[in-house]
Amino acid sequence: MSMSWQPAVDVSRRGAMSLSSRMLATGSQPPEAAPRPGGRQGAGRCGCGRIDTHAHYIPARYRTALSDAGLATVDGGVPLPPWSLADHVAMMDRHGIDVSVLSLSSPGVQVLEGRPAVKLARAVNDEGAAIGAEHPGRFGLFISLPLPDVQASLEEIDYGFDTLKADGVVLMTNIRGRYLGDPEFLPVFEALDRRGAVVYLHPTAPCGLGTASLGMPAPVIEFPFDTVRATVSLIYSGRLRTCPNLRLLLSHAGGALPMLASRIAAMSGLPLIEPRPAGGAEEVRAQFAKIYYDLALSANPTALGALREITTLDHVTFGTDYPFSGSLGLDRHVQSFEAIKATLPPEDQTRIESGTALDLFPRLRTFLAG
Image (tube, rainbow, N blue to C red; front, top):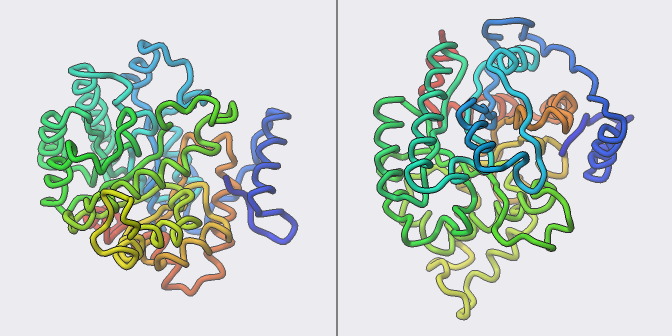
């Protein structure tokens, strides 16, 4: 969670939690942020170049699938927020966002199994592409894959990239309790590696959470730690080493990863750990530096400072987590991002706001030029 970074406001994690508690207690929403200079209200592009790499859509087909599966909430009690394309575009214009790269949030299509999951993946991917066609130049797309079905996922990769012209894939941090370094998923990563694809990891609840959740929804504690589990699985299994063309993008400033990075690297050579990275701590640190990280709900000095200990600002992107961020203070998050941005040199400001995203998604250059 994040909030406005200004002298009169507490920007610590404690302060952010306090803000959210007050909002929940009163039922209030954070004050509207003023439109960003260069942006404008209403429909149409803002012309300012900001790219949101962490933005969600909630297709009607997906909402129905969750309901049919008996899920009134997701991830331990989180209600699905309302979403409409018109509201999403209005949010983008209000916050000076030229392009949103859309993805499904947790739990993704793995809420279903077998052929229903395959059909759901195709349906939500088609709808994501249709959104982009309806608003040319405003939306990119991460396609969803129906893992653990490897063959169907390989077919969806071909369809998504070749037919829908997707910008990357979104994977949940675990697939029904199996982490992404699992040997069975190797063909999927090899196919993505051949394409030099962007693989966006979105946190989801770990299996068997039970009492370890402390009775809280998974986003409070477990999302940041499941990001760590997934990333360690990919590095310790050697998957990122053997698939060097992948571009891995992590949510929420990498969750707890920056704070645990030194520990994870230091322990990577222990003989009792198997599999473990062949290159030991040096390989682990190199992979952390190579990974990309978004700032969705993490645009605060603590998170950015921790990230700068393991990577450089040309591996950091802007993100909103819309529409899930609506109840957590999206406007304050954007204000906080603006305040942090103002402390950076102009070239770093541009990097985070759009430059890194354009490196990851070259197709978007034509969006901004249009």
